[in-house]
Image (cartoon, rainbow, N blue to C red):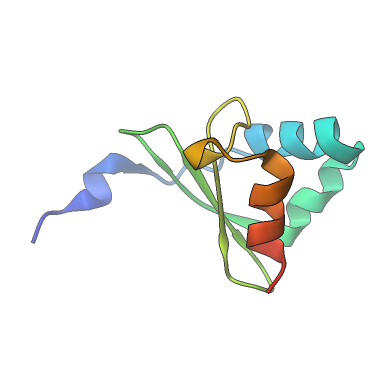
Length: 81
């Protein structure tokens, strides 16, 4: 089984998520709803897990969601069960 841990950086990176919430509604404190899990060093995606739903929000360094979806849609998918 391949070891994918070498592709993960566990250094917390809150800047992309802070940017998302500041740009979206001016409330970067919403970052407190998420846990930083890791950055995939191959794709550059940051993995944030919502503290209540346990669902993931994946964004790049510029705050763009994975899979080309709208950022509000991506947030809704991670926060609404």
